[in-house]
Structure formats: C-alpha cells, structure tokens
Length: 115
Length: 115
Image (cartoon, rainbow over all chains, first blue to last red; front, side, top):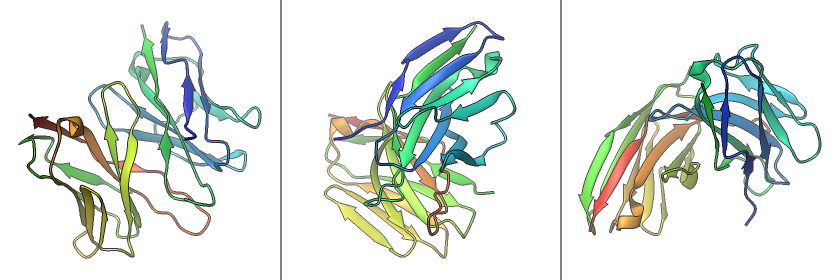
C-alpha cells in the first residue's frame, strides 16, 4: 500500500540554524500539507500546497518557513532560523487522488529538537 | 475560523465495552469530518470519515455519526480490544470542488482499553 515517507525521523539542531525536513508524498496525490504537533498537544495546520504554489497557510507559517517541491517526488519544509519553540513533531500529508479526493494520509513524522 | 472541541480528553474502558468520543465544530460550512488514530511515535492514521451529506457511517466495529444541525459528530467503537488503545483525533475541513481544505483537529482523546 502506498504511503507518505519522511526523513529524517529525528533532527537535532542549534537555535538559529536552518533545517530542511523532507517528505515523499503518495505518488498520484495532488495536494500536500505540513502539520506540526507540539508534545502532548493537538495537530496544527501549517501550510497546504497545490499546483506548485501555496494554497493556504496558518499564522504559524511566518517568514521563517518556506515549502518547496524541488522535483516530481519530494516536498520540503525549510525553517530558516530555528527557535526553541519550533521543537515539535512535523507531519507531512498528501491527498487528492482521483479515487479519494478528501482523505489526507500522514507520514510518520520528523521530530525536531531545537537546543 | 473553524474551531473543533473534543471530549473526553481521556477515556478508560474494559475490553469488550463500547467507547464514545464526541466532537463539536463551529463553522457550519465544514463538510468533511475524519477521525484519526495515533499510536505512540507514529503519525495519525485515518480510520473513518464522514461527509456532511451523510448522517452515519459504519466500518466493522467503528461508526461515526454526524448531526449537522447541532454541529457535532461522534466516534463509536464497539467490542473494544487492547489494540484500540491510542490517541484519537477528530478533525473538520471544508472541501469543495477541486479545493482541499486544511484539517482543523480536536485536542485528542487518549483511549485505554484494559484487558
């Protein structure tokens, strides 16, 4: 069964450093998302991406964040200058196959720890 | 914007009993309501969903009901098993035509099924 994959599984970085989180969405999906989950809290929407551009973003997704689909398979989230409060689990999701347009499938997540 | 409230935050049941988790949403335009199961260290996994043109949907031991007038929806798990133990999240979104809305999640319910 196709699945969303994410790398790395765990990223440790120093405050102020740039990080890039990588995702490979399900191959025939058209919509891509990033969500984050601070430990013990609910999953929060960051950004959605369709047709090579951002379609929606939350107030969390400020100028320090950017997304890119550099090729036909990868979808990346970049945090330019990490802050302590960026420590969280980051989930990539994809949706929008012709068979099931609504269902969003999540990857296993990348745990980001900012020291 | 949309706001989703979820209750209870924790739920403990005996194996074989039923479990019910309830959610309310604020935006009457929301039309898609998925439920996700999250096991420790993993990403959310879609277990069942319902669209606003349907009042109830069932898949084996899992059922979801939707009351559009009251703006609430519920997850019902019958004959619970220890492997049902996890955190369950409800979510809501607005999907229309070719557009995929972002998911707004509830805070989650930690379900414990005691053998």
